[in-house]
Structures are given as C-alpha cells and as structure tokens.
Image 1 (cartoon, rainbow, N blue to C red):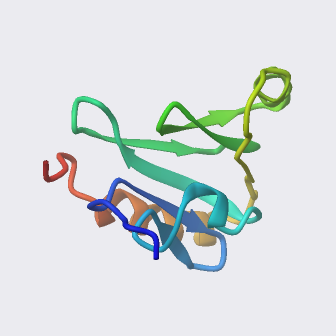
Image 2 (tube, rainbow, N blue to C red; image 1 turned 135 degrees about the vertical axis):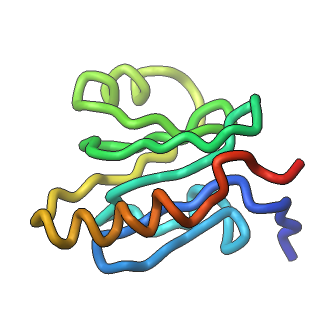
Length: 110
C-alpha cells in the first residue's frame, strides 16, 4: 500500500474531476483534459499552473509548459510525467477555475 502525505497538490480537469496526491502518485493521474494544477511550493504558498498546453512534474512540483518547454523536459534523463492541457469555453473555464481558486487555502498546513 502506498503511503500518502498531507495534501500537496490537486489537478483540476475539464469534466470537473479532481485528482490529488492523496488519490495517488503524479504518474497515476489521468493525463488528458487538465485545466489547472494547484500545489504548495517550498514556501508553503499555493501556486497555480493553468492555461498551459502541457504540465510536467519535476523536482517535486508542477510546471506549465509550451511545446518547446515539453521538448526540453523530455530531452533530459530520467522518468517523465506529463499531463495534457485542454482548452474549453468560457463558462466551463470559469467554473473549473473557480473551484481551483477556492479549493486549497493560500497557505498550506505544515
């Protein structure tokens, strides 16, 4: 059984689904339809990556990337974890981003 830490990150999908580190490892999360990823950085502050074509997990945090950033990431050695962004209409975007913006406290619990 995998032991999970406290809530560190959440992925928000175009269909309203949410996947977090309490659900599994970054590689276990569904890969398509990502609209936003929220996580706590080293300073214990919430960060949001959104409006990106690709999202990559590296050094314990998430990054939003364009195509060049993805190629740069994939060219380096080691295991790669990539999720794919999704563009949607304004109403759907606001609904998902409203959830993401209000879901995690700005400062995480240590």
